[in-house]
Image 1 (cartoon, rainbow, N blue to C red):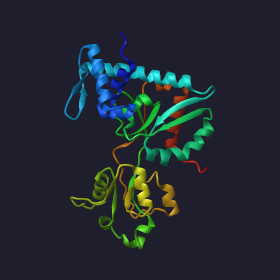
Image 2: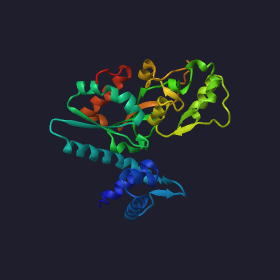
Image 3: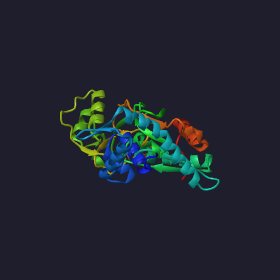
Image 4: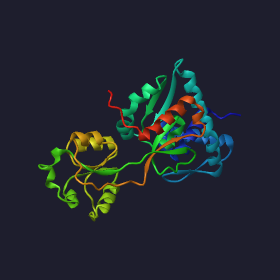
Length: 297
């Protein structure tokens, strides 16, 4: 007996996220609907697949084994449907990536991609959820982390450096920043938390205060726009703000830079490269590690 596919999809999403709420966001349903589908599946197989805690869920051993078994099958179904619905003579590859990487690294290189692969259509997908939790939706994804995600292949794509940057309009005279301690008197812009700034201050030999003030942004693109508008000083990713620094739209007051432990990785499921188009995009992305962005419009 085959269980309802809706229940399988709900289980797969919940197993990847370990969250009924995040699974509901991915599938466009309510958490209640996800819970109902999983209960239906558990009733059919006669055993629990999740252990429910107050604010989280975890897979039972049998639930984990089931999740690992169906993941590749769902990916194959998605790939088969993409092939079925593709335009004749054209091939589609879905790439998941965060907004800042897409805007600052990928988009400037798209002209080169189209020139090299005119028959491949890239479908770019952005989501507030981590891409490694949504691999059933993607052929390839660019993830930020340590390269230790389960059940996917990981290849290093880009290591970054960050250093303070600000717009000339932030200060009356840009040379008024005489030492790194002066930064503590300026509005700091944080990405998600103050960890990055604390690490940079420590590397620069400055002991930051217990409470490090500033504005916290969830979206790195919005943070960068705030810096360009003169609303504060940010830890700019040097690989992403080269044009702004060269044009003087952003200034870098100190040479001290921070190399985060995390990096950008290209990730994909084991069978993804069986598609020639996906393999071509993978090769192009990895070759881009040493390729500068095109200046063509």
